[in-house]
Length: 170
Figure 1: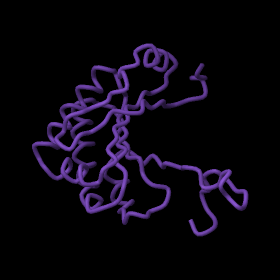
Figure 2: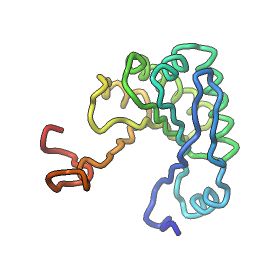
Figure 3: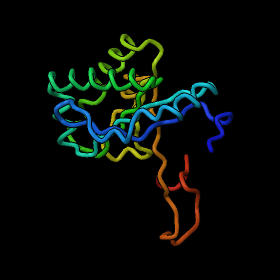
Figure 4: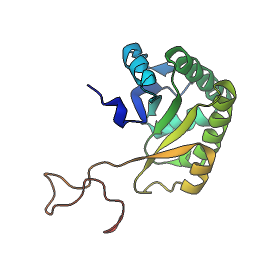
């Protein structure tokens, strides 16, 4: 049971983005019952798109025909499921990071024109290991969703917060 009264957004994880702009593994999107319940409570529903292979991401975001196909395909999926926004979760480092800000700016402009009022965010790293231009990324979309994974746990020699905002070498 979700306490929608405590939430502003819920995110569906995830739909896969292929290097040629097609989509895969939609995890049974749309989850109509959950989407309707969220919307009835005033909670926004965000569709998350993933791609975890940097070379595939590079191909997708730098090949105009693939990029345009992705834009159309993701817009259609968002509309069919009544999504209020999109979160891009492209992970790993590599040469694609130098192209991601323009891709996000283009995607944001496209989706804002096609689905007025929608939110477009990027799932960014809590630590900038990959040489991201985070200021440019923040300016290219509506926001950055920081992925705060566990920094401490049963494997740690000391105790600490799950995802510290400051401190240590982070």
